Length: 618
Image 1 (spheres, one colour):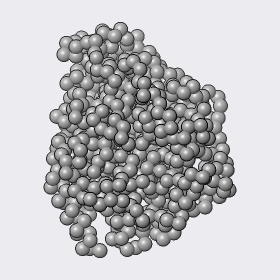
Image 2 (tube, helix red, strand yellow; image 1 turned 90 degrees about the vertical axis):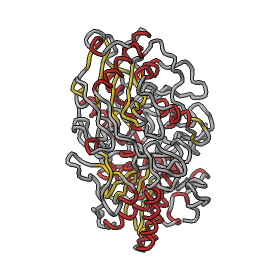
Image 3 (tube, helix red, strand yellow; image 1 turned 90 degrees about the horizontal axis):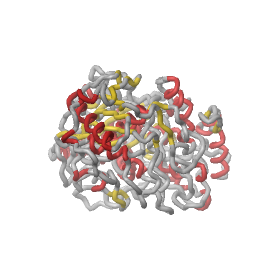
Image 4 (cartoon, rainbow, N blue to C red; image 1 turned 180 degrees about the vertical axis):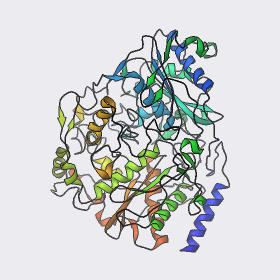
């Protein structure tokens, strides 16, 4: 076992020797150069946005954040709408649909955080990109296509999360978003010297929505064009924008037009517009009405920095730190007594070693190494350890924990009873959605009264299969999965159990300033659930002992890193820890004649290797 560990460590060290700040191919890791937005940079971004809005004879709210979600400024133009309306574009009723009482500044902040959290030194994604990959079809508007690779990711980074930090907690990130992730065009990342340093978010049209047809995109979006102007001098490098990246053979979208009506180089000085064309505004809990400088990602002040733990440092990992520079989630034993600290450490190490060999899906240049977050939780959802690649997307910090907790919860024998005991989601429109109805629907769907209580091992991919508005996923006209709303009343703002679990707390945070942690009323699901791949339960023999999540690159890459990481760690440890026995995995189930999916690894995943089907038979 020790020799195997040394060999794997040597591989990781060799990979790290090829690191460069600008990325590369052949498996090099991408380590961003620490950089940050200065106050003058934020002023320039706002002034350029205001100039474009004025040229279009519209008024809006503009937010600027740094890479870890600190809100550096919010500027509200004179006559900008005070509130906005949530509209999923499918005439659905309930959930968050038609909510129209929230301050516009919150939508601008959510857009900015989304663009910042989905971008890195190897990829630049916008909120338009986010909208493309989270809907019931990929591409949206393409009938007969399966759900997006990040289906349902809009409900992460919530204000009730116990992983993301409250916005008021100094500079230490990553911070929570007031509305989760945005799918509405108008959020674009900001770069300096090739490193993402933040993002800008704009709302001027009064709607917080989503483009539901990427086949016929229609006219350019004014929020997006104002954001384009805002990024002048800080624009994402052309070579890493979403439209240079493919997923499932489809090219992603960054913007639809950059035809401006103003010249950003001629934008007035910020001092001349502040007070004359609008003003900085106080957004309680997010920004106090002044411009502040951003933090440099990768430094202690940002909340993310390199690890010094000798047991993991050979992987090149970064960690989350608190205000004193202490590791927030060092490897520890399970609070339920089922995993040792040594086992947690090896699972984390083995998983990131897999990542350090894996060819990235959503990064440029081609051949770049996957950059991910990895977390291990116990059976009650406690975080036992967290590590990340140097340039992993910041969105993965919260999502990866959702993944692990989702897999552990739905693989437990108490899931159905716990869900059935929860209060209904009480919608703003006066209606309600009983959580117990999802349990009843699942029992009928699986023709099994013990569904989610019989010890079947569910991955997040399996849960996503049964949480889509069509089952089988992508076959239009079929009935919904039991954890989803019926397709006729489904949208990204009323999707089913995922939203309903967090709905009451979500609304309380927005309308009653409730920022306490715990989103669901279930102690083991404090930050909600996730519906796409990368989360797996961990077993010792047939006993559930915890779960793993990996996130930050393509969904299949996340499956590979988590699943193979657990398998590799189990072989090194020889303590009986490993993936779920094949006989109890959810892919043994075939409701409505369609077998669920459990794991989906890329066919030839590694840089500088011809190995294929590496998850087969495990």
